[in-house]
Picture 1 (cartoon, rainbow, N blue to C red):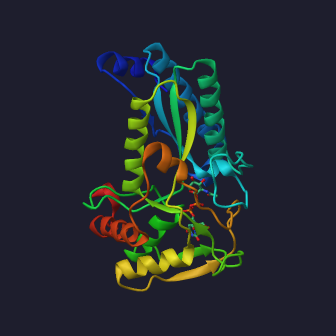
Picture 2 (picture 1 turned 90 degrees about the vertical axis):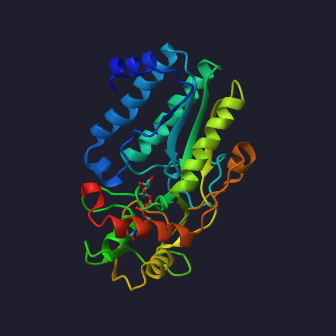
Picture 3 (picture 1 turned 120 degrees about the horizontal axis):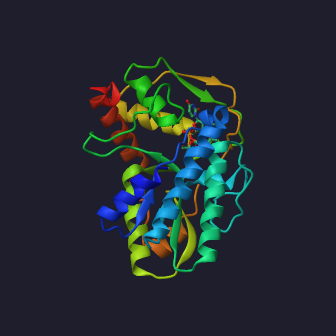
Amino acid sequence: KNKEGLRKIFNENKIDAVINFAGFKAVGESVEKPLMYYENNLFGMITLLEVMKEFNVKNIVFSSSATVYGVSEKVPFVETDPMGEVTNPYGRTKVIIEHILMDLAKSDNTWNIIALRYFNPLGAHESGRIGEDPNGIPNNLSPYITQVAVGKLEKLHIFGNDYDTPDGTCIRDFIHVNDLAAGHSAALNYLFNNENLGFDAINLGSEKGYSVLEILSNFEKAVGKEIPYVIDGRRAGDIAVCYADASKAKKLLNWEAKYTIEDMCRDSWNWQKKNPNGFKD
Ligand code: UD1
């Protein structure tokens, strides 16, 4: 958001491309603090694009999300699906930014822009040194589970078991963070090897759906003990089933997810076990 600071970075370095990871991402917080979300996510992106334009750097990869498909019931989600009805300000910032990027590409065909639509990132680096350490009570499933397993939280609350799925809990497409990282390298290579691409949105998912109870049982195997849970009511805004059609990533980026759900749970747990208090130690 700091234009002068950005100009300094662009002046002092030779920059070929930019990846914008600097968005806020907590759905609940975005409902409570919408202005904070619009200010950070939108102004941050617009300021960055303005400075990129000044320096004639026109390759950018943006962290988008499967959330842009909204509350649709048609799975798998494919990039040709319309962006759907999004239920929270966080998700709306992703939709609005994709529109900004499309408009920009339309106005000037020398931009090369890719929005990567992440499904549900899980796992940690195998070293156990880089992992997910959310502030406060985790909103997302996997850090909640690992914090129960390590004894920081009492039990998992499963949000609903009355969905129209085989075991009644929601189904998601989990993707290992290392696969996600590799997807960004692949996107950069694609930008560098092509010209005048304009705007493209590409799903990064494993194409496989696992239910909340299946994730829990995979974590129990990784941890080697039972993880206590209770069934609570549904969480507002959740959809029953969400998984990707990732054939576009395969075709354009020559990328596909390689890690299994067992790898993801093992690596998340390895990180949590080595860092029971997150990065504070
Ligand atoms: C959520 C956001 C999505 C965002 C992503 C990353 C919603 C509707 N979607 O995805 O926009 O890009 O996080 O921040 O919020 N669950 C439990 N107990 C928990 C936590 C989660 O049962 O304590 C269940 C949820 O009901 C859901 C599944 O686990 O069915 C996955 O939840 P979560 O990890 O929050 O991801 P999404 O909701 O899929």
